[in-house]
Length: 514
Image 1 (cartoon, helix red, strand yellow):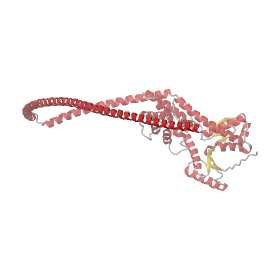
Image 2 (cartoon, helix red, strand yellow):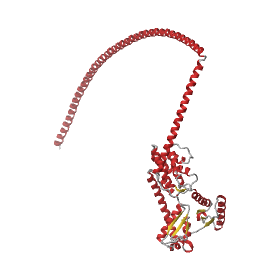
Image 3 (cartoon, one colour):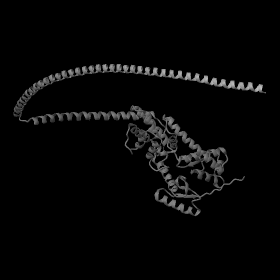
Image 4 (cartoon, one colour):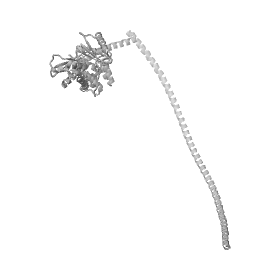
């Protein structure tokens, strides 16, 4: 046991001694390294201080050199500026000397001019004195003052010039009058010869042919219900007399007459004649007439070569197909005026297109004058303004009867063309216009009463058929309404014989069996 412990103790002691020796060696080595590092650091610091001082001295030297260079450069620039300033001063001095010399020269010239002016003034005064002496001598010789002589001379010249001007003016006026009258005759005659339009007086009746006389009875219907229905719906008077195979339709309104004619022809072709079928055919005929109106408006524009008219204005223009003025068809009259105006404009060297356009639209107000308040001139001008027509066309419409002063040659041409078209032999008849006007007044009087739906003047104005609204007019009110209408007709119209006022109140109830 002791043999084992002793080696262990010896080993431990040796290990402890070794550790102590290693530690001391390590310490000594570390101290040596630290000392050498401090020495190196001190050396580096010293070298850095020396290098910094050297760099500082170099920077100071460089700065001194730069300052010296800048100072030299500034001295050079200052010297140059001083030289330039001196040169400018010398130039200014030279200019001042030159100006002084010029001023002295101008003063001398001014003195010379003053002396010359004084001399010329003296000469002028001398000449004026001599002139006055001569004038006085002339006045003594002529026994007339200078003003009197001047006045006499001026008066003589004025009288002579006035006489010559008057003679020349009279000659010019006479020549212009002769030439203008001759030119106007030639233009008007040429326009009339080139526009040979047919003129047909409108009638107030239409004749519908029948396939046989048996058709008359079918049209009349049982107890006359068919003919009453047709007359009620159209406002046209059907005349069924002894004329073989024909029925006469009488109405002052050509639109109503045309609707009735078309409806009756359709009924005759169809063969089924009863109130319901009559109502259907009347509606179909009314739509067909509206289409005809549109087509007639388009035909008028194409025939006259006018394009770009508003579609609504074309429709209104087509309504003139069924409008007459003193027996003259207004649409044909408008087309004729358009052609004549275009030809006259061409003869005068003007653009014929605006002239034809104004001539075509000059009576457009007659298409709506029975529906709206105002003359056809005012209504036509309003329609043209509404649909963006030119100022020339509007002025031509307003001035073609002299209501407004014309502002262009086109307006004057349209006025002349309108007169030419209306003044043709047989173009117009006043009797028919008076007749249709009386019938229209009859309907207007009836329509003004409250509760009246529509009214028709039939039997050549001997009867007024008044359709009332059943919800507003009772059976008892019908008696009073008929009397009021008749009294107002008596007060406002003049007519031969008597006029029958027929008030109709009809109620319909419709239902469907399903």
